[in-house]
Image (cartoon, rainbow, N blue to C red; front, side, top):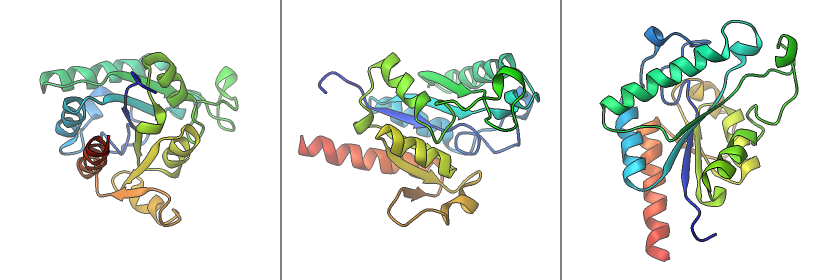
Length: 195
């Protein structure tokens, strides 16, 4: 897999930013403390940073795709002001049961399916086996497993209530994105030493 890049796939709500149900307004956005610096550390180590987010609020009719894209532009702008950025944003607008119209569909992009990660790998020449997925829900862990990434669960967002559902050893559990990035860089540095 020479030439392929490592990525850190990050869930959005509850992982990068404070969980607020069906977040879509820029004025409600709030980084989890240390998240911008953690993203900066990943980029400095050569990782692509890719946000992958289920946004079923679109399917439910609470907001539209433009609202999500506007919020992502806001997040990117905030990060750029802090000297870093996200390399790509992917989101799933579907829901298999609660969706309206064209959005009510069983898809391969809604986590725990791996569709967003697989698409990102194709788009950005990513080696999934050397990449990580960080999130606060079982669906994030399933997406990582189905894509062949290393899964990390954070205890922010829904993480506290979701972590006890995990079979021990299925995923690394970290306090928050800051601790998750420290763990990613620890594993990465160990692998580099062995190469």
